[in-house]
Structures are given as C-alpha cells and as structure tokens.
Amino acid sequence: MKALFLVLMLAVGAAAAAEPALSAADTQLLRAQVLLDRAHFSPGELDAAYGSNMRQAVRGFQKLRQLRVSGTLDAATWKELERDQAPVLEVYVLTAQDIAGPYAKVPADMAGKARLASLGYVNLLEALGERFHCSPELLRRLNPGKKMRQAGEQLLVPNVLIAKPLPKAASALVDAKEGTLTLLDAGGMPFAQFPASTGSRHDPLPEGRWQVRGVATNPEYRYNPKLFWDAKAGDTKARIAAGPNNPVGLAWIDLSIEHYGIHGTPEPGKIGKTQSHGCVRLTNWDVMQVVRSLGRGATVLMQS
Image 1: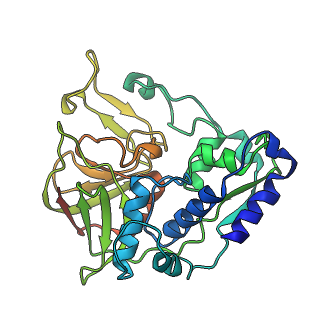
Image 2: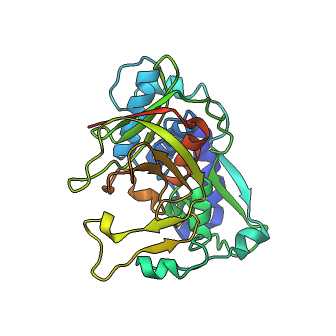
Image 3: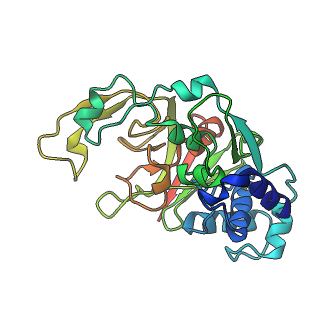
C-alpha cells in the first residue's frame, strides 16, 4: 500500500494544488478494489469508496477463501488479497484514436436514441472509465491537472487488464437479496462474483431455474413500450443501434424465459444502486466476462 501511495504522490507532482489527490484511506480502498477486481470478485465501478458493492465483493472473496465473513478488510483478508503482487496502477499513454473518438451525446429518450447510427461513448473519460473499470471521477483524481486532450499524454489508471481469463462456468446464481451474480463450477463451487441490479417491485426477478439460450455481443435493442410499466406516453416501438450506450450495453445473454436476460448497461455507476425491469444488469466489463464464461445451455438459478 505504501508503494501505491508514493506512486500517487509522485504522479501528482506540482499539479497537486489544482486538485486534491487520493487520501491515504482512499488509496487503501482503491488498492483493495483493484485486487478484488483482478480476483474476479468485482466491486463494480472502481471509485476508491466503501459502498454496498464493495462490501459484497469482500464478503464473496472471504467466503471463497474460507475466511471469517465480515465484509470488512481485516488483516486476514488483506493477506489473501496481497497474494496478487502485481502493481495496482499502471501508466497509460493516450493514443490518437483515444482523442478522435468518435464521441457524441446520447439522447435520454428512446426516439432520440433510435435516430443514432450507433450508441458510442459520450466522451473520452467515459471510454477510459469503461476500459479500466472505474468512474470518470476516479480518473480525474488520479490525474490532477491533466488535460487529456492530446495523444502521448500519460495517465495513471487502475491496472485491471492483466486479470486471468475466467474458466467455463457450469451455472450462475443470481441473488436479488445480495444484489450479486455468482459463477459456479461443475461441483457447485463459486469462483467469480459480480454486483447486479436484479428487478424491482413492479418487475421482480423471475425466480426459478432457467437456461442460457444464446449470447449476443454488441447487440441491437428492440424497444417495445408495452413491456414497460413506466413507458412514456406516446412511445412507440424502436430499434436502437448497438454500442456501449445501448440500453443493454455490450452484451445480451438470452434466458429460457421470454423477455428476460442478463445484460450490460450504459450506467455502470448505478449497478446495485438502482432497480431494473426484471432483467439482470451488470457493468459492461463484467457482463463481457460472464459472456466468455457462461455458455449456451448453462443453468441460471434466480432467487430473492
């Protein structure tokens, strides 16, 4: 942890007066979040804060490692996390493609979305946040004084892309009470966990045992207002182009119950914080991990 704090201080340099760097406590939390992310016990959007998603990630990791399940970062948990000794931060150099985008504002209404040829990123910070599993605000805090406007600029980012690929899962457990999706092997042992939004009072999670019927990455979205209790008056069916800001994000895992699936989101910071329309919603980066692990025919058990 001390090494990470020193890296942060050196990176800030003379720009420290422009914007505060992470505190020692925030630095420690960020370190834990990155290590949990690389262990495949995702805290969701990395933000150097201890929220509900972080607590559930710690609890899942403690269960896997047969530690006392407290949801807190005690000494035993730190010892297990720090078996991963790779750097927690890395330097990323902005490319010309990063700067060029293209980037475009995404309308809030479905009719406006339907007029777009693609649902890409709104800006560079959003794109980098998704790539490195973090909030745009965290990127700003890690890089005070940086303009992020030209190729060649060096940024500090969470070192999450070195995580090992997940093995194939035999099944998944979606727990609405815990707000998690857990992947299990053929013996029923968990090996990965992700925060999830899992329904609402109007559209509760469909409890039961379902199968994966198919997987689509970078999918189009077909909006049908008849399926949504909160559809706006005058809404009509719409075909929404693919892209990370598509309503179902970067992937759709189709289940053996009509109109329900596991999918990504254009709003990663809201995962586990807001409700869904009955489907299981993950961050785009987490759903892509699940897509690579959970194949057609796998079982998905949903419980409240």
